[in-house]
Length: 332
Image (tube, rainbow, N blue to C red; front, side, top):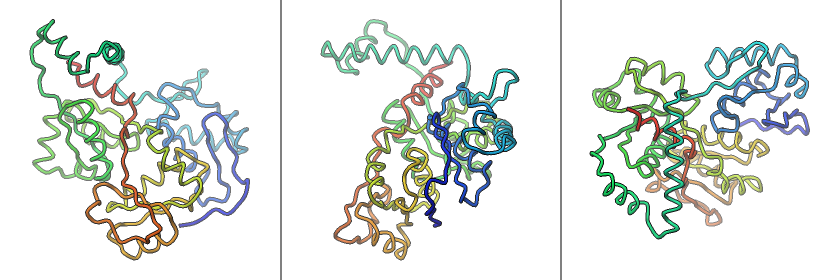
């Protein structure tokens, strides 16, 4: 892992937190693309919002305007931005953009408000549902299902578990690599699902592979507050992350550096839980270890000083994404 030991070498855009590391081996264009995509992914930059102009951003970051222009055009070609003459650079709305979907989102917000008001009257959510059903006597809804498509098993299972517990629907996981040559089981899941869900990083790829299914692909954004405890510790000292999937470890490190760009890179240490040499190296440098819940049965022997915490995200998916997913599933 390379460590940047320079001081005050990065210029910052104060509105959306874009950084230029002049000591990095990555080109300025690559740095900016990665940061903008990550901030869209985590909801720091939202759909339909306007980005700084080429002149403004180049001035703030003190880079050539051609670099900013190239970055914006490449992101437009990748499907993240829309460049409108005399308007500016707009973040492309990542989900279905229709009046019907907006209506369903508003309905969900209305229902959530009614749940709060019912609670004040002593009614639980289930009691409220039962009361509404008894009053209206609606027909039974068809079974709803969604397929979550991600590049690593840990994150996929987190997403699926939250969707199941929150929306009480059927949710299945499919790895991104399984779309290339899908098995009969994967094909069956794709056929039976009402829609697909993935993160912003994989949205274009998933759309490409699933377009023949003619079903909506919705984007899942992470809830930044889910990382607060980890960030609080990592701000003060190094922390270690242990999992069996190296893709998940890479994604966790990238997520933390995006949510908290001021974190020191050397404070985020990762190790494959199956690699005893990596585990020993990391545990020798930390006081706190975060371990994937899917590896609890393989927790390695750690130093007595190391405090072990199981990675647990009560709400990893942002509430906005859950509303949109539920609205899309309820659309006929």
